[in-house]
Length: 279
Ligand code: A2P
Image 1: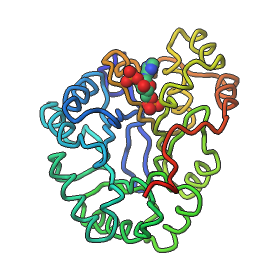
Image 2: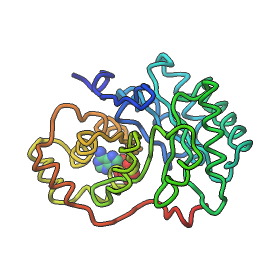
Image 3: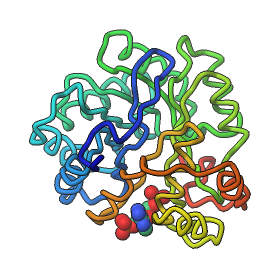
Image 4: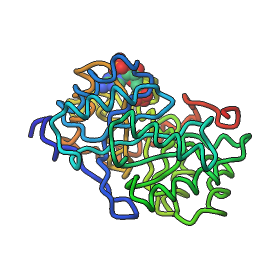
């Protein structure tokens, strides 16, 4: 099997039956002028799932790479996200149109509310807009990101549709087990962002030991740990060889002892944003 074989990346099925490739290429912090090149590299490496956001400022570069990929539209899964300042019913509809135009897509596969932005008090209205876009067929699946603490519960108080995806920070040193379990119990697929802990988890002995056992890299071990626990991962890299390596994780499996040793690395070390302060 080669890394250009699309079958190399398994898929999960969302609650509405839509398939989502379990490994996506995340373009957080990828400069707008480089997005086209890196996303093209990711397609060549076998990725069929790209995760961007309005806030990343690189949707147009992602769109150009999609247009030039030569891949059929139904072979590619594209996620983008609603930014905080665009929350509210009408503003969400307008922001979605902008994202869709930049991506050059008629239909977006997955649209997420990026943060609850609780001080704005608009996430329930924004969700209603996502539901409307889903109902009209402009989005194949809808979800949320970073809905920690009370916010998921508050969203569900007024939601007609339970989010199909919850994208949250998860890596060995910060696993958010309670939030993950609750999201799964509600039928949501958990997507891990910063799945490598932005690189900080790579040197843990439990990980380097498993890597040497299997003749793979520490990053591949961590990504495999996620995959075997049923999460989607969106590792970010700007290095072509690491982009390829991160998609090439099908040829080995961690045993129960190795999985437990990675799960034992929880230390509460968050690398992302404090959502209460992020409005
Ligand atoms: P680089 O872009 O130079 O490859 P996360 O996805 O958890 O946010 O982690 C991203 C960080 O991890 C980036 O600094 C990225 O650096 C690094 N990284 C990504 N893939 C690998 C890999 N296979 N091996 C080592 N570091 C990696």
